[in-house]
Image (tube, rainbow, N blue to C red; front, top):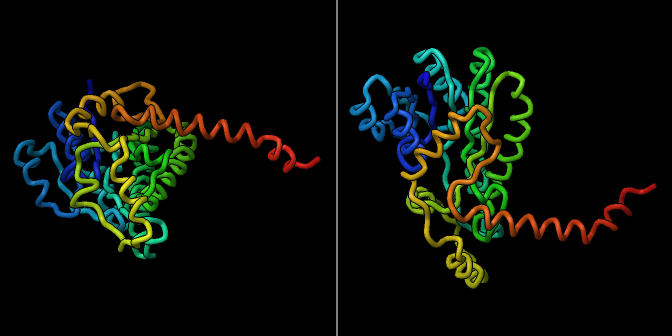
Length: 273
């Protein structure tokens, strides 16, 4: 198999770090980005010239363009671009400040879009490429306390589905990875929190104890699966990672279909003659 060139945002930890190591272990080359470049030192020490460490805050559109251009020039091509940088914000919708909501969207949505826009011309010119958008089961379903996060991931899902249709003719694939709960620091040190309103205490407690938060997955176990996705001749537009998402999605979509069918007479009435 011909080695691939990867560009991975948020490669300092979590999925980004696991997938960078998975690629490097088999001899692929990786442009690894992080806000703090020193967090990439261990990768460089172990894998040498296979790694191009880049300092990057994905909310900076000009910096995104420069980082992607540097990676393409350094390695000569870009085969896989992974938009992994992101974080979770916790807060009821009423509790969200403008700054908190905008920051969540700037990183999780706009950052991914800016990197994607920078990578597409490179991939279009070479006639191939694969864009991996790290979404979530929270990109197709929703739960209390993480409305801002859901807003960012639902938007990423929609724009990426449009993108997939737009770039297919150029030989570019798009895949949305939709993990369930994993033992990353998404809800730990990387997370941010709104100032709490006491009226939501019961809702908050129920959300913290929901069954879907039990038995989180092991991020290291995702190494082989991500390689299967990027090596597929016809990769999926969407793929779950973890045990919980399929059950959550099935119940959610069955409920939606039941409601839509129940209210279809109203929909037809709204059509008019």
